[in-house]
Length: 293
Length: 313
Image (cartoon, rainbow over all chains, first blue to last red; front, side):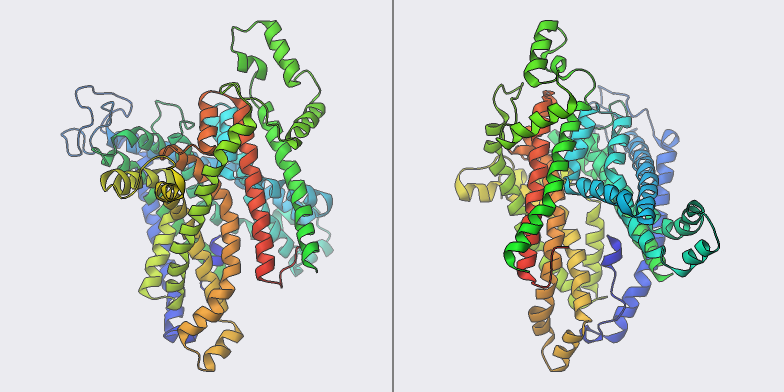
């Protein structure tokens, strides 16, 4: 997605000052990369240290302190309708959602890359079958399929991971196939074949290292989509079952109180938004780097 | 290629996907752990009752035979019977379809009203501050949770300011127009960033092409070139972004219908989930998937009509 969004190489000088396009092309992408990486590192750190940083147990209910405002002693971000500490839930939610977001991208990345590489390299009926499956999943409204799959598999972490893998591998398969198709007729592959190397060796040792970077970059942006999907499932009541804290569930809990205690909904939503920005900036910055290479 | 052949080929390409979708939805119900008949009747049902329901649903037949029956029923428009609503699912879906269609069409229009001017503004001066701002907002909005945005819009533009209704479908055309504004805006804001990114990139690509440079060198104004040449050529890719986004639109309707209490298909699906009515969930999944396919076919046909250079592969 980000590949087509960049500024085209030939600068449309007639549009404005001649240097502007070249500057726009060069500078922001570098700062994007740095800002995105730094922001993500902070969020990851907070998630990993949730157990240490969180003031109290995220599931502990305090009936004496229901819907306390931010700034209440002992509850810097206030408490929710059950008297649970919002800051603790936010930190533990970061752990849950980032862990699932990053964890869930691994299976689609590995499966999709492998299947896509085979399809592109072998061609023929393997390619035809794989591409029809890819078309099929792409034809589906993704969230609808995800909801249906998680529902029939019974909500839980494993179902969510399986459902995401079933749906998301197609993106990597399509990406990898297109790249392998391009690479396989290049001189170095032909040279390797003339040199008598096996197909397996050529694919794994020569072609894959050249296509994997693009997939990893895509995976970074993909984590945003997965976190959105997982929090959406949480909001719909199909997410990770309690007592685990999840940002989507936090927003769902906050919905009835959005009039008077608006921060209960705003805080976890802002957390999702900022995490998304960090990952998108990082992904865009990395994509720009690869393009330049 | 004549227009009729173009249409026929596009429909033929869609056929395997439709078959695949029915197959996938059929398999879906078989992923449910346990016996569907027992699930529907509850744990205290007698074995005779379970066996009777199994027979009525054809669960005692082989899988290919069951699939054949499933497709046969679909072909006559029979989506089965809901166990929770105790009525045929077909009419149930038909009653709720207009709400979801309203939402999708309205959101598409709003997404264009938001996306096209912003993309145009950003592409007129690439690298300028407007471009920077639009780009940052569109990157940030990629990670914007629709359900969160919907809740906040409902509260701030709906309940608190009273500008728009915060729930329900409304009465009559004007009523729908006002009641559906906030839900549609929520969906539109989710798609707008993608639209802006694609349109902006496309406009810049067109801007570097020879004929635009020629038009410019002939003395046409910047705005004239933008309107006459660039916008027009960016329209086709814009349309394809919208077509691809239909999948997102449809997904977002589920969330938005819940927030704004709209009696659409997404709401029906969630009702089906909470009452563990597998038939309803299966049927809605199928209908929404078919909806996406139909919209994509229409978009492809419209693209072919707008840009005669395009042929079906």
